[in-house]
Structure formats: C-alpha cells, structure tokens
Length: 462
Ligand code: ATP
Ligand code: MG
Image (cartoon, rainbow, N blue to C red; front, side, top):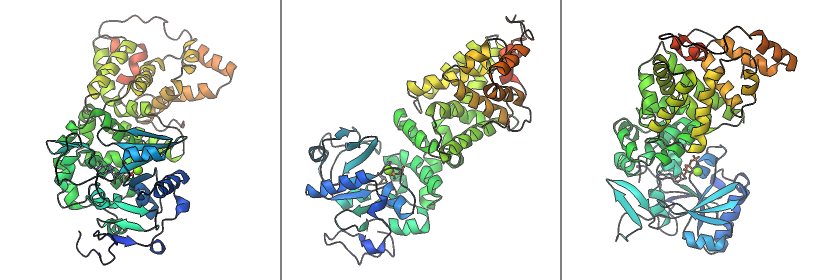
C-alpha cells in the first residue's frame, strides 16, 4: 500500500481498498458501451460480482473515450458461458470469455489468484520468472494486485456504481504517473516482459511520466522481449503503431533501446544514418499513419510494416541490384529475405506480409510510365498503397519528387490526358533494357532506390 494512502474508507469485505462512491467520481453509465453495461447487469442478475476494469475505467476517469471495455467477475469462464449465449472462451495463457455483440466484443475475465497456496497442475506455469500460463482464480483484491499498472487496477462496481482502488491508482491518475503495482518493478517486467512495451504505450498515449523506479529497468531488461512469442509481439506492435500515437511510441521505444528488440534489422539501419535519410523515412511513415488514424481514415498493418521494414529491404535491394539482379527480382528477393528474418521477433501474418511485399514490389514498377504500363499499374489492387508509399519516399528525398507528382497528376487526369501523359514518354526509353555489366544499378526502373537523396519538399499529394 502506498504511503499516505487513505484506507479509512474500507469496504465491508475488509479489503484494504479505497471505495469512492458514485457522487464522488465522474464515471457515468451513459459513457459506457451499452453492451458492456448489459454484460455487467446480466452477471449481477446471475448472482455474480461484476466490474468494469482496466482501460475503460482509466480512460473514463481521464475524460477520454475508452478503446474497449473489459469486465472482471467472480464467475468462472464456464459460468460466463452459461449466462451468455453469444459467448466464446478463448486463450490458453489466460482463459477469457468473449461476449459477442455484432462487431463489439466485451472481454470478461475471472478474478485471478495470487501466488500463495498449492500449485494445481495446469493452472499456472512459470518459466524463468516469466508467467506463461495463469488460470488460477482468486479474489477481487488478488485480481487487482496482479494487474500491471496502478491506473489499470481500478474497478467500477455495477452493484453500487462506486470505484474501487487497491493500488493507489486514483492518486497516480491525478499525478499523471505510470507506476507498476508492487514494490519490485524488475520482477513485474520479468513476469511479463510485454509490460515494458505497455509502459511505453501508456506513457505515449496518456502523456504520463513513467515512475523512475519503473523506468530504470526498461533500458536494462529489453533482452527479455526475446522470450515473448513473436505472435504476441505482433499484436503489441499494432497497438503501439496503429492507434494514432505511433510517433511518440517510436521515439520512446528508441529512447529505451526497445525498438531494436522488435525490429533489429531496421534499428541497425537507423543506427547508421545515411545523410539523415533513414530516420526521416521511418518516422515520416509513422507520422503519416498517425495522421490517417486521427482523420478516421483506414490504416493497414501491411502498409505499417512496409514502412517499418523498408530500410533493410531497400538496402538489400541495392546490394542485389549491384550484383546485376533485375529491379523486380531484386525487390522480390529482398522482400522475402527481410520478411523471413523479421518473423523470429515480431511475426507478421501472411495476410499482411504478402500485401506488404506487393507494396515494395510495385516501387520499381512505378518508375515505368510509358505505354500501357501505367494503366495496368493503376488498376492493380495494391496501387493506391504503393502510390502512397512512393509519396512518402519522395517526401523523404529518396526518390525524385517529380515521379510522385506525375502519378498524382495521372490519377487526377481524364482518359485523354492520361493517354497523353503515358504517350508523351513513349519512345523515350528502349522497351527492353539491355543490361551492361556494372551499369545495372543505374539502369531503368531500379534507379530510384540508388539515387543520392535529394532535398525535395512535399509532393503536395496526400
Ligand atoms: P487499452 O485497451 O486502452 O489499450 P487496457 O489497459 O484496457 O488499455 P488491455 O490490454 O485491454 O489494456 O487490458 C485490460 C487490463 O488487463 C489492463 O488494464 C490491466 O489491468 C490488465 N492487463 C493487461 N495486460 C496485462 C499484463 N501484461 N500484465 C498485467 N495486467 C495486464
Ligand atoms: Mg482494454
């Protein structure tokens, strides 16, 4: 219990917690998703305890709109399934009930227990200090203290609309402080290294300051992320970079030496700045994604990963061009190699990996503006993403701004103008390129990626 913590308002169950009654906090049912409210009431009617917890309570208390609503209860997942027809049990590491309402899912978690008492085989499994499975159920207090940050361990009780605080989360919310629960932050990070990424994410999202005791181990324990399954890191990367706080997240991850744990090949490129070029491309791409999120435009993991891994892909591409590969083959090979090397840290599912590679593979083809090619390219399902990517490259000074401008105009032009644009270039270059030894790097479609960076401004395209 933190010093100075007021536990005079103890709950009748004698938990050492602070209970803030309805008239002393700002959470109103009107701001909670209808479906979450339904789940809370149905559990209550079934005779169970039911609370809103986690980010939902935190964000409502901060006057922000929660991303999703999580529910905690003393009902077991099987009990929850009996109460809701529209319910699926998921998870091995943590068994959870998902209650489905169309596209909205309310996650219902059973209170988790503490570390004391007999270990029942299969309930809980710890490897090298890391919790790899945890399905031991417990009390509300135990559940609170097993959560990550104090501000994430606040409970909104549907029975009396009070807010319950076991860990000093309300004080930390007021102070803008991100603090792990308990007095051994290192141990909490070891239990689950993903908490390091969560620290960065919440600091970026809420603008909170990480408590110094929780901040120190971040730099030292980064290597623990290598023990986290690559598929779980993929999910965390999406939360870091596709929620409108990507640039803040990126800068903080780099500050704590964590970015390289997720994207070693990209970090390697960023560490060897090339006329300040690489770092501007990655951060511009991330900023561009943030802007799209803020404007409510769709964003895709394929484009994000195309941005995050472009630097190593581009470098490999240049090496392959230098040994006389054709631009298209070089990009296919470079893309394949970079993607497969990445899978061991943050795995990228095929449904995103393939379109990511297509975005890259279209880059050399965007150099080809004569004849029927631009028409075919503009009809390609990945054209728009590839064009956006080209614009980013142009903005970073990696390709000539004129090329991106040409494609901007081409899309805006009518049929006749388009024919003129494509026709005007007809005959400027031989249709089949003859590759001269040693000249491959400057040849035809491959020239973009080997040009010296030029100081170009915006193409005016968005
Ligand atoms: P948001 O949903 O806004 O990203 P959140 O805090 O709700 O933030 P979730 O991943 O939805 O994050 O998790 C819900 C709650 O579960 C958290 O608030 C926290 O109490 C608990 N939790 C999540 N991940 C962990 C973890 N790795 N260790 C301990 N507790 C966790
Ligand atoms: Mg949540």
